[in-house]
Image: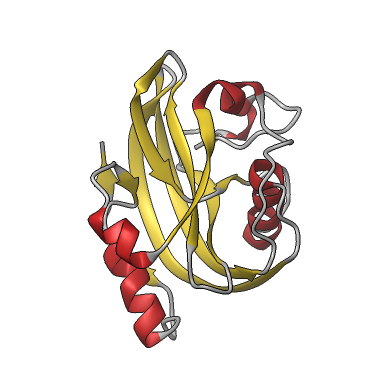
Length: 176
């Protein structure tokens, strides 16, 4: 998902044919619930899915900086402890009339702040993000909705049982 700030969403996309560098956040609260955003196609709210907060890097910022900035913009949550990279994933998907090719890094983060306020969304995000929800692992396992990455329920279960991996796990490439 593109990140929301004052810049147009397209500016964070690398037009040289390389994948868009993205930082995502697996944000857990004290009860080990994960925060997911509810998104949809801008012109078709019925074409919807759930996804982790995050977005493209801006300028010379690091992925860690992008993860924290995106989390603040999309959720209003700033009181976080950013942990290690859990997973890396390449993905390609259609959204808002074009194809997005991304190289995503998923950071573990913890917070006690559970109230959300999406005050920093871009214009495109305002048209395509319908809200946020905290999910238990059990709720995520039973979910019939589309969730990205597609194996998130199992990945979260493994994370909660085994802890963070010693090195980031490379997830299967997802092409939608």
